[in-house]
Image (cartoon, rainbow, N blue to C red):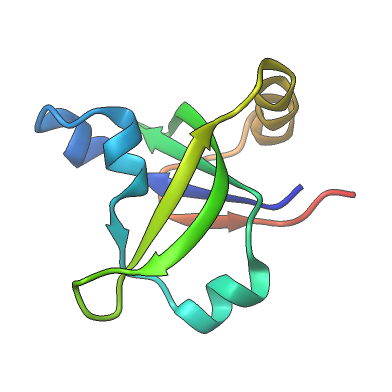
Length: 101
């Protein structure tokens, strides 16, 4: 399981949905991202996972050096697995979580 946690706190506070906040254009190192290529993206606010998504695809955004995710909601069993994995981890910052076999 490969996960990236992205901080959506500010965007949520501005009234944007968790889905739109999570898929927005992220300033990420594309080479590193594609090398890691997470299966799941977690939208995090105040250090807690708020939304869980499966990464469908990633594209370059119209903003330079930014990536935009195409996402679909996780299934209930995927959410349970992700929650068990991230339990007690500080998810305050945009982070690649190490893969689990």
